[in-house]
Image (cartoon, rainbow, N blue to C red; front, side, top):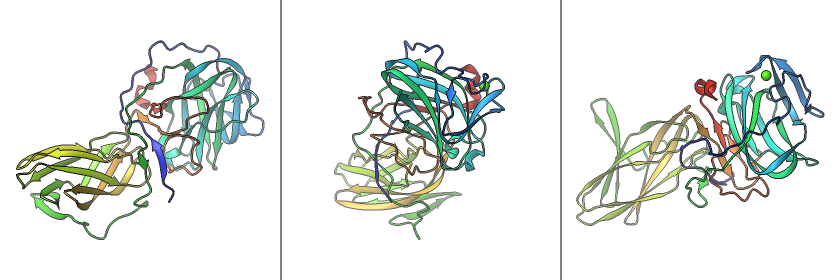
Length: 349
Ligand SMILES: [Ca+2]
């Protein structure tokens, strides 16, 4: 499996940017109530259909790119808010793509969403795209055989929000999808009442953790670790995680004072939903031990997109929403540039 180097936003602090100015009239016919006027559907399998999220009509696209009318746009980040729907729900194959394309250029995906990421029904989405300034179009694309609907588009200038990230964290690669060890690796199991605990001895440390963890998409700190240091010497414990694509867990080293018990929450941040088995590795005093943990990631909003340094990979892990760094953007890698918003709160936007 390809190892994808990514930079991912590490927090879920979401605030609307200050000083945002609406870009009136962009895109033209933004709710498709005037049919396909203002849009070029040439070369795309795209139609205007009933059943819109706002008003009667919406764009439905199966393949290729639908392009808005050219508009003169300011340079800088532009936030696009829209409603998106995967017509066949989470089973919808392929991906929905968005881009801000200078006039005369071919669109290339700058943000991509899967059916699993969108779920069922209309989903509010906010994407920040970079404008080089000048005449450009909004491009809505589809590939991979699924049907998608788009409605209620609006645009405003945006101040990119920079979030703290680690330099060059890595995503995925090991273990493979569906990986599950035969046993408990280096851990032993203890039952306390009806609860199960895993205990891992590493150097003079005994690490206690739960074999099963539940968390929400994008959240950190899901893995509670209790570390007993049986030595009087101070130690350090490094926690790392091997996980399928979609997880983002940088290595973390924590001081463990001698003769004490230290409790902290390690990250199992994941940007997709589902149940996965990951391997958690513990290193201390040159000793390295591992334990398997089953992680169930539930839908959670707002869900942030994973930001790649360059082009989007062609084969996205399903359920993973991604954004690319467009040419000339010169923005920090850790921007929150794609948000799936809470459908229940959509009326407030
Ligand atoms: Ca509409």
